[in-house]
Structures are given as C-alpha cells and as structure tokens.
Image 1 (cartoon, rainbow, N blue to C red):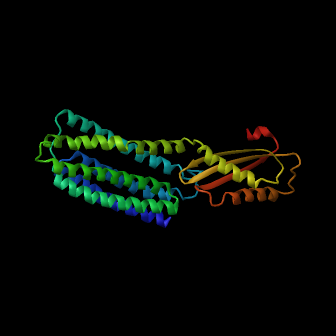
Image 2 (image 1 turned 180 degrees about the horizontal axis):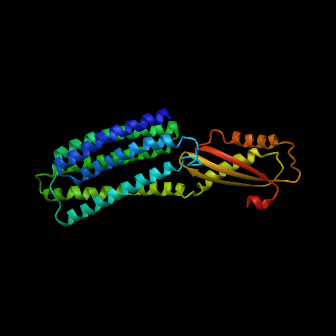
Image 3 (image 1 turned 45 degrees about the vertical axis):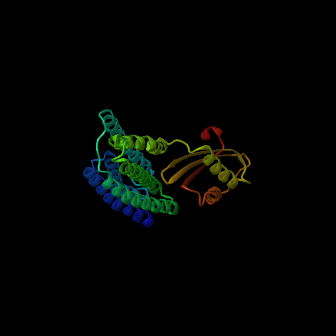
Length: 300
C-alpha cells in the first residue's frame, strides 16, 4: 500500500509540473499540439489526486454502506480517466481540422522543440517508474497511470520530430507546409492514440458491469478449484467469477454426491481451506465463497 501511495504521489507532482510546462509553452509557441499535451497532463494531475483517495478506499474493509467493499471504485475511476482523455482528444481533433481548412497557423518551432525534449524525457521516466511500481504492487490504478504517462511520452516524441522538421523546412521552398504541421500533427496524434483510452474505457466498463473474465483466465481458476476438490465426492461443481479492480470474486457452488456425509461443519471448512490454498498467489487477489448442496437446482 505504501509503495502504491508513493508512486501515486510521484504522479501527482510530475503531472502538475508537466501540465504547467505544456500549457505555458503552448501559449508561448501558439501550438495546439503542445496545448493538447498540456491538457493531457492536467487531466493526469486532477485524476492523480482522486486516485490517491481511491487507492486508500479499495483496501478498506466492507462497512454498513458498502457491504461488498469498495473495489468497484477502481474500475469506475479508470473508466472516467479514459472518457476524459477521449473528450480532450475529440475537442483537439475538431480544432485541428478547422485550422487545416482555414490555412493552418504559424508556431514558434524553436521553443516547441525545447518543450518536446523536456516533456519526452520527463514522461518516459515517470511512465517507466510507474510500470515497475504496478508490476511490484499489482495495482490496476498504477497500470493505467503508466499507460497515461507513456501516451504523454508518445505525444511529446511526435511533437519533437515534427518541430525539428519544421525548423529544417523553414526558409526552404517547402516552407508553405509549416503552418499546416501543427494542426496536422494534432490530427495524427489523436488518430494514433485514440485506441488506448477506448480500450481503457472498454476494459473497465466490463468490470463495472460484472462481465466474466476472459476464457483463459476462467479456465485457470476452474482448474485450481477442481484440483482442490479431488477426492471429494462431487456430482458437479459450478464456478462463477467476476474481476473488479484488483480483486477477483469467485462463487464456487459444489453439488455433492449422496455418499458425501460430513460429520461436522469443520469437515466442510477443511474443503474450503483446500480451495483457498489452491488460489494462493493468484492475481488479482481472490475472494472465494464455497457453498455446498445436494440439490442441483441450488447451483443452477
């Protein structure tokens, strides 16, 4: 938890710095591409503040208001991030198309190049750090945050390439292209990155709506459960599951055979303990409920 909180605090401070750089240089250079980069960083700053609160919430135990805990806040926040990114990209795309139609506009490529170098270095460094932290902690919040930083780094890298080209073309017979380079860059950037927030929204909406995980994931869980039930007289077994944020909820409904006659409740708890042991180390963290019945209808 402390590692995750430290990584999120890094994201907050760096997002604030990058947003100030992007919006400031965007105004100085009159570049829409740099303004787009700055607004992505501003979204990252605002959402990072919220993310710190959500990261504390999702590990809290269930209470009288949320009987099943706060896990659903995690995919909800990630989906909101994706939607905000799509909104900013949409407005930027519309503005860039309008600029191209009306002859483009001049920018100051020298200052823009300086900004792009600073932004590229900062974004890639933070993105790499967040990816390592996500791998260590298993945090979906950090996984999405690392993608946001890498998107920002991609934007900055393309900005750098385009404005280096603009400096090279200025004063040549190709100088007429330079006013179109900034809005054209925005259009290319939006088309290049739009699939990333779309995927973030899709994946997290699936979790909010309690979609079952993919088939390979389900097969792994079922194999573990069935292995733990080996030797138990079982007529059938229904395993249902849903992944929400960093938690996996597994409902295991065991239809026992008539010859299964536990002497005490503790006998059933021993079977539950075997299943829990089989799920140890599984990512995301599993929460397993195992129910026993002799009547198939209760498991349907």
